[in-house]
Length: 359
Image 1 (cartoon, one colour):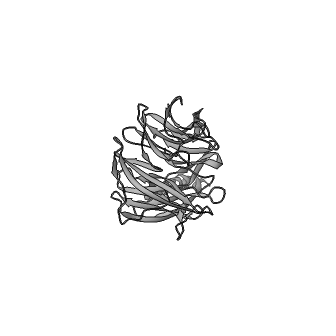
Image 2 (cartoon, rainbow, N blue to C red):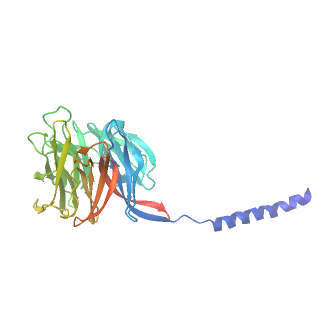
């Protein structure tokens, strides 16, 4: 027994040496920063679930359905290493890790229509209120009423702008943008066109552009510009918008229906000067490039190198389908087609993110 006790220190030293060797031999994983596009597909309300798709901009691979989304997802923003996706019918904002796209939690928000971020916080718009969310705690910090029916939102020049549109059956009102203080959530209202809805973007000068959808009868959709000083003016007609530099990209979609309510649609693709409103190009897509006939959004990459257009499913006969696979088109800055990807059902929004991926 005495000899065995003498061996214990030697045995312990051997074990420590072995552990040290293992530590020295272990390799720390190396990561690549991968620029990517994350696409939100709405699915079909009450019938088909939505989904997240992923486009890897390094190798060009497109992966459909990497995550499932329920409750009619709307847009998507990145903040604090997470992706935030409002899910209207689920009364919640879904949170995903931006690199793995794995679910990280949900945040209760009633009937959320959109989210936006100032880079430090996330602001969700749901029902008649705006909710400030902390990406550190994934919880609502503060909320306040903002308007009868709140829709799109965007952060610009130290404020949160929220579109106040018309609810179901409402024939009056719904013609304002609320400018919200991000700290106090106090607000002021700026009159715009009828029924500002799901499209708001901001340029580098802090000007906000919003699509007012009209009344679907005798008031057509129009794009309004709201300056940081609160001055609003109509720029042009349009349905979907984005801004890059001093250029406003506008897609105008019109639809027609036959006796059986089968839909056909067509789109125009124009650009305007954000400062003057002057028409820059009557078609920002190349003449020989495909022109999506059932566009659902337009987004320009932050560096202006690519233009992305989502499209509903379209049958061989040209009919619009809301229950079949849609498409994501990627164009160069000059409008030439780079690739057309098979997206999920009703692609609706996207975000440009840099993901950390193990080599």
